[in-house]
Length: 115
Image 1 (cartoon, rainbow, N blue to C red):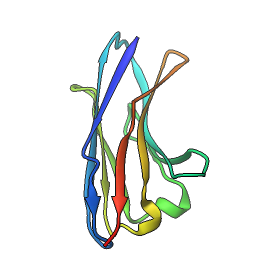
Image 2 (tube, helix red, strand yellow; image 1 turned 180 degrees about the vertical axis):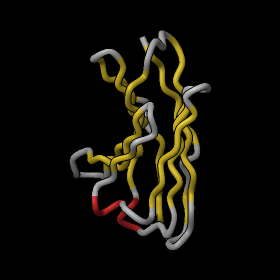
Image 3 (cartoon, rainbow, N blue to C red; image 1 turned 180 degrees about the horizontal axis):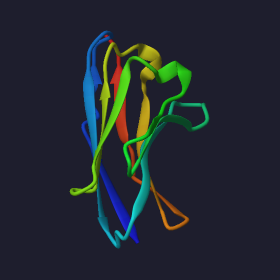
């Protein structure tokens, strides 16, 4: 079992920045993909960013330019830098890991963008 613990969620004003972090622990053998998804109230969970163990990244077009994902393979951590935040970025952000055909999710961290 892989456990994921997110941190960094907060209330931030529009235009502000926030950095989310996620640490993986437990039965870590070879984590192929780490990333972030988010879910706003009344909406489906959507992809924010993914990064492979070789550093390749994947962002939906709507996230490109404002969000940046990074990963530390030695520490099994993944961070999400979010800039120029908008009210529509308000959501619960979930850490995601794929390892050996299994998927794991964190409990989520709340990001609220509001003045």
